[in-house]
Length: 290
Length: 144
Image 1 (tube, each protein chain N blue to C red):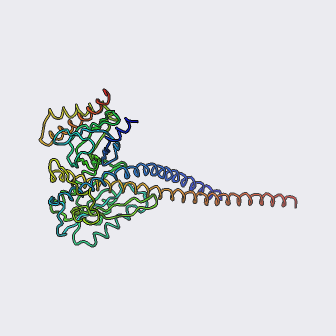
Image 2 (image 1 turned 180 degrees about the vertical axis):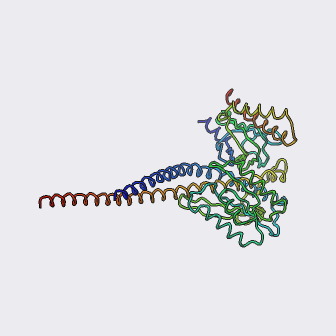
Image 3 (image 1 turned 135 degrees about the horizontal axis):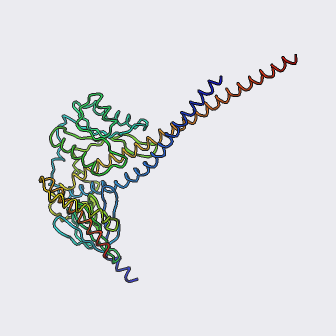
C-alpha cells in the first residue's frame, strides 16, 4: 500500500511540473498575442491606403496595364501556405493545412510555397510539389521577410511556373476565433471594373502624376503584394498565439483536474492505511485483554 | 483668437503610413517632401497629385514648429487636402538613434569603397542614402 502512495505522489509531482510549463507557455502566448494583435492593426491602414491608391490611379488612367494584372489560363496553381514553426498550438496548423489540401485537390497541377516548419514537414512527407520554403519567421515578423516571400512568388508567376498564386492563411478574428482563408494574390484583380458604386468625385480627380502613371504603378504593385503577404504573416502569427494560448490554457486546466483527482486518491489510500493500522492495534489490544 | 483662426484656415492633413504603423497623422501648415524628381513643397489646396517618394527627409511645419521624418522610398498622394505618404519605412527625427545612424553610414561608406559587384554597390549606395537621411533628420531636430 505504501508503495502505491509513493507512485501516486510521483505522478502528482510530474503533472505539477507539466502544469507549470503549460501555464508559462500560456502566459507567454498571451503577451505575444497582444503584441501580434497590435501589429495586425498597425499594418491595416497601409494595405488599405495602397489598395485605394491603386484603384484611384487605375480609375483616373484607364489605359495603364501591367503584366501582373493579366489573367492567364490556369495550368499550374501556386498555393502559399502559412503555418507555424512550433507546435503546441492545438489544431492551428491542421486547419490551415486541411484547407490548403482541399484547394489543391481541386487543381490538376499545383505547387506549394510553404511558410513555417510544421507545414514544410507535412507537405514534404506527402510528396507535394514544394516550390519554396520559408522557415524561422520568428515571433515578430519583419517587413523584409514579407519582401523575400513576395519576390519569390512574383518570380514564380513571371517565369510562367505558376499561372495563379493564392495565399492560404489563418485569419485572426478574435482570441477564440480564427479561421483559414484562401486569398487570390496573382494575377491582381483589375480594379477597373468597379464603376457604378464608387463614382464619387474623389476617385476620378484630375491627378498630376510624377514621374508617370506607369512609373507610379511600378512602384505601387510590388508594395501592394508585399503588404498583402505581410498581412497574411501577421494574421497567421496572431492566430498562432491565440491558438497556443487557448490550448495551453486547457492543458493547464486538465493538469489541475488530474492533480485534484490524484490527490483525492492518495488521501483515500492514506486514510485507508491509517484506519487499517488502528484497527490492527485495537484488535491487538483486545486480544491481549482477552 | 485670430491666430488660431488663421492656423485653421491654412491647415491640411499629413499622414505618413508605413507597412508597420501610422507614423504621422497630424494637421499641418506646410510640408516639403523628397519626390524622385526633387524636393516638393506642398501647401493647402494643392492640386491632386500622385508622386513617387525618394529616400530623404520629410520636413513639415505644425503650429509654427518644424518637424522631421526620415523616410524610405514609396509613393505619396495629395487629394482633398490630405497628403498621404506611403514610404517603406519612416522614422521621426527625435526617435532616431544618431550613433546607430552614424555606424550605418560608416558601414555603407566602407562597403562602397570596397566595391565588388554592381548590385552590391547599388545596395550600399542606397544604404548610405538612407543613413544620411536619418542622420539629417536626427540632427535637424537637435539644432531646431
